[in-house]
Each structure stands twice: as C-alpha cells, then as structure tokens.
Image (cartoon, rainbow over all chains, first blue to last red; front, side, top):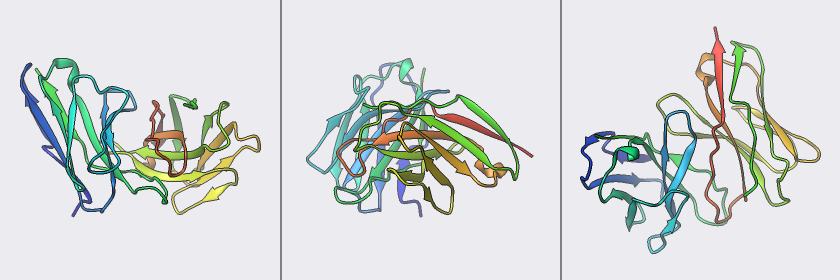
Length: 114
Length: 111
C-alpha cells in the first residue's frame, strides 16, 4: 500500500464550486505539504503544516485553505474554484526536526475547473 | 532564498553517463544541495543530497565544486527509466524551510 495517498485522483468541477482534496499518510511523519504544478513548471508550495496545530502559508495560498484534522490527514480546499486553479496537486510529508527533511510525495490529484 | 539555475533540457544516450549541472552562486554556508526527480505522471522523489563532499548512493553521485557555487548530479549509466525532470534545490538539512522547486532539467534518454 502507498505511504502517501491522495483522493480523488482526478476531478472535474465547475467554476464557483467548493472542492476538497484529501491527503493521508501512514509514514508517521509530523510535516505535511500541499503543492500545485502547472504544465511545464515546477511545483509551487500552497500550504504546509509542521504538526496538527500548525498551519503556514506557502508561495501561492490565495484562494486555498487547509485543515490538518490529525497527524495523518491534511486537506486542501478550494472555497470557490476558478479555471486558473486547474492544475496537478501534490501532497507531501516529511519527518520532524532532528532528521533529514526528505519529502515523500503522493501520486497527485489532477483537478480541472471548467 | 538562495536560487539555483539549471538547463531547461538535456539529452543522453542509453547506457551512457549523464552529468546534470546546477549553479547556485548565492549558496549560504548552511544550505544543503538536494536533488529530486519527477518521473512522468508521478510525484517527485528524492535522489541525493550533500553539503561539501561528493556523495554516492545507489541512484546517483553528487559532485560539489570546492567553492560550492555549483554542483553536478551524475547518473553513471542512463536508462530509459531515468527520463524525468531533475530538480536541484537548496535548503537547510532539517530546518523549518520547505523545499522550493524551480523548473528543473528535463532529461530525455535515447535508446
């Protein structure tokens, strides 16, 4: 079984709809991240969380919100989806302080906003 | 944040060595050099990291210039499965700084 899972894997929605992307991990990591990737570009950080009570904005947080429901779960919400949020979304995890900060990525969620 | 510069794309023949360059002239003394790669239709995966000395692991080698302003990821024998986008990233080893991905180098491997 995959250590970092994302649901759904693909989603098509309409402008103005509220969308939630979910990420779960079985690695026991403290830290979780959400990135988006647009065609031909690298990954850009949306939000990250270093533990259940910690939420931090990344480079492109506008239009997104997150919830860290438990150590193993980190959800990304688009309150009112717009077409330029069409992208590939990746969740990632890493260990806490004191260990190498290698990030482990999920398989991605492809979101299309019409 | 210290930035990196990589070529947009490179090409290699199968079973030949590949040297992927990365320039990071503004690197600080606490920045580690990390390499990740992203295979088609997958999330990125860790390849290797280093600080000052050259590093080897089962996937690749990392050669770091003496002044640390550049580094080279070396794939000793490229295979078709190595075709991917390779990202060179600077960050503190286990600090409170998430990875910042640039556009990377798209490596094509020709059979």
